[in-house]
Every structure is written in C-alpha cells, then in structure tokens.
Length: 404
Image (cartoon, rainbow, N blue to C red; front, side, top):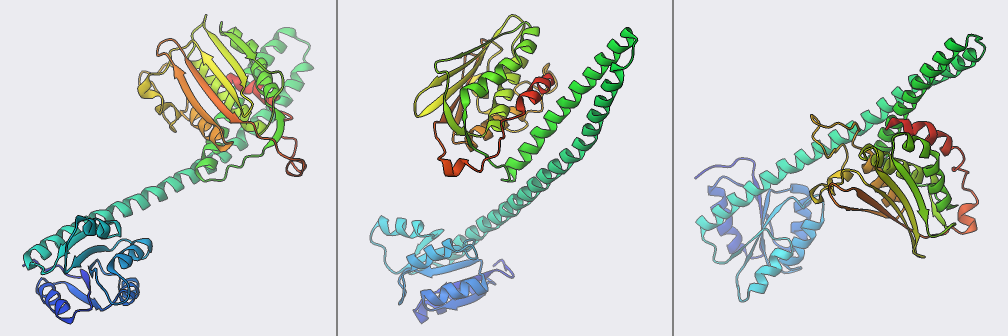
C-alpha cells in the first residue's frame, strides 16, 4: 500500500466502532488521523488542525453533517478541505444530492469497503492538490497584475515630467520666434515647433490613457458627476475636431433630436469617451467616407451614436475590441497604429457612469458604437460642492486629436 506522509485526515463520527474501523484502515495506509465525535468539535478542530480531508458522518448528535459541510465550505480557513460524507442509510437520490449541495465532495454508504474508501480518498486528494496549485497560480497572476499596474502608473508619471518640460520649452521657443524679423525662418520655426507640440500632446494622450487604465485596474478611478448639458458637450467636442477630420477627406456630421439634455455625468470622462470613439472612427475610415455623431433623447436615458463607413468589425471581434491591449488586425500586418486601450477605456468609463455601450455593424461597411447613458439629475445638495470640471477640455481636444 502506498504511504502518503503528512496527509492529515479527520474522522467525524459519534460511533466509536465506526471510528475505530476507519482509523485502522487509514492508519495502515499511512495517513495521519484526527478524530471528532460531533459537529461543533469537528468545526473547531478543522480550523486548528487543517486536515486535508474529512470523513464526515451525516448523523451527528448535535448538528447534522450537512450543516457541518456548509459551515466548513463557507469558512475561508477551511473551505479547501475535501469532505467525504458517509451515511448508514441511503433511501433516496435526494439525500445524496443534498449532501453534495451542502459541501460534500463525494459520498459513501456504510458499511464502507476499504478498497473503495482508499481509492476515493486518493482521487479526492489528487483533486485537492490540483486545486491548490491552481490557487497558487491564480494568486501569483494577481500579484503580477498588481505589480504591472503599479509599474505602468509609475512609468506613466515619470514620462509626463520630461514631456511637460519640452512643452514649456516650446512655448518659450514660440515667443522668441515671434521676435525674429526673418519671415522664412519664422515660418520654419513655427512649423517645426507645431510638429513637436502635436507629438508631445500625442504622447501625453497615450500616457493619460495608461494612467486611466492603471486607475481602473486598481479601482482608484473616481467619477465626478455634475449636472451638465450632455448635448452641448458632445456637440462641442465634435465641432472642435471637424476641420481635422475634413482634412482627411472624411465628412463629419452631428445630428440630434434634442437641443438640450441635462444629466448628471462626468464631463471629462465624456470627453475621453467621445474622443476615443471619434479617433477610432477616423483611423478606420478611408478618404471619401463619412462619420455620423447622433444623439437621441429617450427620456429615461440618452443615446449617443458614433457611426462610420469604415472597415467594420466582424461578429467574432465585437467583444475583442473592448478588451485591454487588443487590436483587431494582426500586429505584424496592421497598418493603423494604436495602443489597444482606447476602446477598453471607453467601455470602462461608460459603465462607471451607469451606462452601456454596444456595437452595431456590417463588416466591411462600417461600425456604429451606441452609448446608452441614464438620465439622472443630482439635487442641489449633491452638486453644490462640485468643481467646474468642464472648463478647459476643449482646448486640450483641439491639439490632442492629432494623435490619430
């Protein structure tokens, strides 16, 4: 018989004879044995002794084996323990089902055959060993994910510092360029300064996306709601980048069935949502195409639609586009750049405000991203301390849209 060292088994039975028989079988197999005569004693010993497996009689003098099983599995200290329920009678299949639903991992009827008992115990211990390895792997993966998130946050903040210094230097360079009388040199300086400024803001946008992603992953992202006219916000963002979109020979149209709709939302996050959807639409729409931004008031909620005539998204890729660091095209053959977090941020920020985003598309003929936001209004007491967070985002959008 194979000897399994350091494997601890607890026998829970008020019958001395039954315990003696089970103990003799398990002793011979090399298991370390613990005993309990009632449910409460078993629960206490399970916490202190932490056996690998418990052979649990259904009929105990204080509480039933079913109740013991439930409490063992509900306790994070003991929920890893395998439970083998045994009973001196078996009349209905419901009894077996009841035992398994109460936390038992397997079931046996007395009198117990020693060979069957040992075979079942070995099988249950193999399952426990596999589960243990999976728990360890999951914990390691969670730790690695936390470390990665912290690393991204730290790197993102470190990258922003030199970029801000570059932008400050560019501002000074522009001031100096204005004092140069030579028109040709002045134009060249302004041209190259503008290129550097655009790409600096492009980096800042990517870094901000990384920071927002790390905040979401770490549950540190806050939603600063205030009552605002959502129609004006979306209209202003759309119009602010209209000239850029038109320079790509793409028609941009804004349409709404309501001129004003006040809801409680976070304007900065609405900006990020619309910006990323428009950025995505421009990336995948060829010259001569069209992008429609539409809004519909449904009283209890507002609909925002960003529809393009681009390449579209297949049904198989609908969920993939919202996953972090995912791109539809193969990385080696992709002709459109991107970090793969823009649409992940969109979905996260929409859901954080109680909304939902879906995709309607005809692959090869464009995509339609539809946002549904609840029409909720804050009362005066909730809104009076809200800061003016919708003050300067349009200035940022005008430049940041260059990152597409």
